[in-house]
Image (cartoon, rainbow, N blue to C red):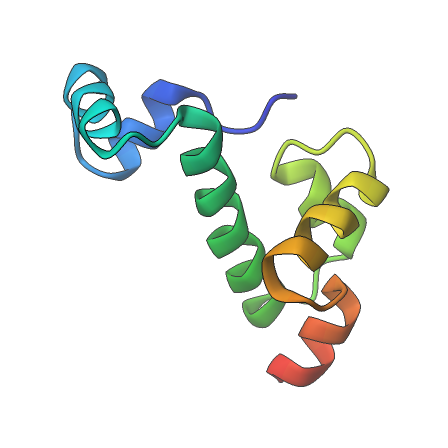
Length: 89
């Protein structure tokens, strides 16, 4: 799984894909950066609001293996997913 595609992300913002592309171009932000931001927000919400295993959250967000998710999460927050969940309670 690749995680949410461009169309799903556009729909999540309530935009047509072409409109989102135009906004991204104007902002100079690439799709990958936006997808990362969406994943970061979703990951934090899932860790706070659910008790699902971290590996399951990683898979749902499109990470093929938990290690990649752990690295990305640490980059976003400075914490491991487990430490974030423990302090977010």
